[in-house]
Image 1: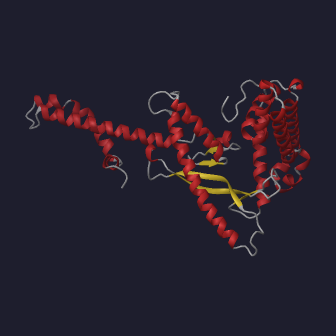
Image 2 (image 1 turned 180 degrees about the vertical axis):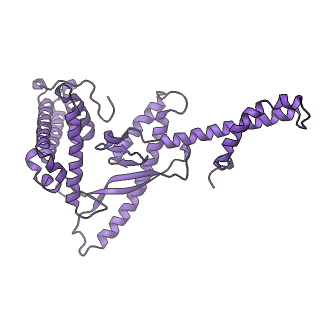
Image 3 (image 1 turned 90 degrees about the vertical axis):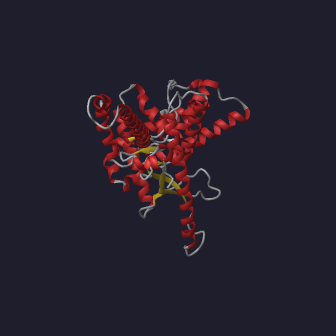
Length: 359
């Protein structure tokens, strides 16, 4: 009911074809009417011609809106292999896997600022289309949060003893477009929660949170399999990078892993502005140390026994993965050193390392 009659009319597939076929013929209508015994006069023929031109224009505008709808994707999301271990991935069927809604919100704010400053250009730009899609995905993810929270509340009530199991929080969303409304202005997504993380235990902030699939049982097993998939993706990029010092891979890692992203930002800040003194120095040192400890707990080669036991694919490539993890761990240690002691930093500053697609 919200669609206009014009929109409904031009959703009939045959009409655009009919007008396209008639258009060349109607160009000659005034001349044919003048030189024949047809009852349609030149003035009437011109009127029909004008009507068909107007209808063709409407068809083109509707087709453009539907094309924008088809190509619309949230700002900052990447397709295929590039998005596999990223906070947002676009699949071949047009659906989106969202892992960190807060990053998408930051991207949206940045995009809106660019529009306000007039950096987007004239007309319906790609940035405006990406912003529209980002708003739709965030709205759908919030609706999915509400539904998941209600279901989790019911699950907690069904436990034999309330409080025996930590609350599950949404950690991953799969979002698909509403195909019944194929216009950019009416773009809608439907999101479902496909993965969860356990709520932190009070007094144990900063501890690693386990994740598990909502479609299977053993949370720890699924977590190991997910981690294995992520590490194998990293290893592929690591082995392909033939640049000096693996610069391309470290650039990728700074966008794919939150801990390395934080260390890279702190390193760039320390080398550019210094660590400061007093509370600023204390805050930087605390942040660097906590991030380093978290990476060590997560990626240290000696702490992957369960991973190799539960993930056969990773166990088959154990030696090469351990070698890569050693270099990742060394990279984290060197970044921490550059942050705490900038003058002794022996890592060259990668001038154009991107942090979440921003220089």
